[in-house]
Length: 281
Image 1 (tube, one colour):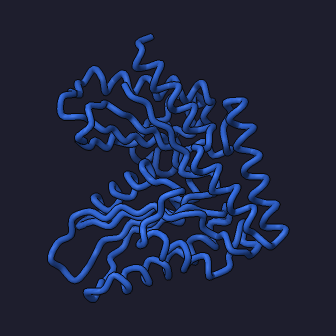
Image 2 (cartoon, rainbow, N blue to C red):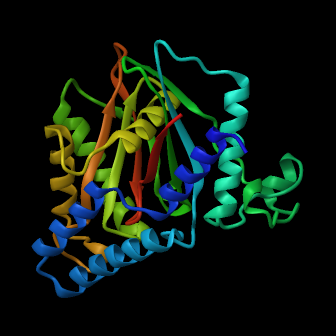
């Protein structure tokens, strides 16, 4: 097995089984700050689960997630078809090692839609999403693996926002959409992932980059305003109330067109997300 395949497989296992240090610290701060006993207990259980999963290299959640790949390429690096195939094989190996939950549906287009083709019992048969590639100034070839679950995808929203030449209007609209999404998700506290772009594709790509690069310890004014406003709704962990419906907001704002609308992609990441890890290839 090639070194790259090994690295990618290990990265996927870490993404599916480990909280990043900033995520652990965000939970510790929220636990220390929360005054509702039941909500505090929920967050303690989530963090304890994460620490056990890391020690055992076992999945953070029964919904082990769909692999999403974010590849950063320095100007002096190159990506070949062979490299992309090795990354795909690394994903397959990692899903078997984690192990990932078998979720690949067999059959043609119709059979995959209605699930009449049946389930492939090989967890490695689960295809990753298309790779998102971005050039960077660093001299690196860095792959981030995100394991994205179904609940946040169901509650995710990609819609237009009429900005009315006001950032406040955009923030208010995002908050109005985030509150019911967070309350309906259930698996909270959440991390809100947001991308704002010129099309649905661009907004969703920016949302994915926000998840890959976001830092719980570093919140922009834009991000903090959204986090604070959603927390005012008092949804709380598992809907039990409290100050911590959302631990943080990760937002990425891309180029914008001269238009009356902004396309906003919003994902209410569950209490274990974003499940992520990176590796330099």
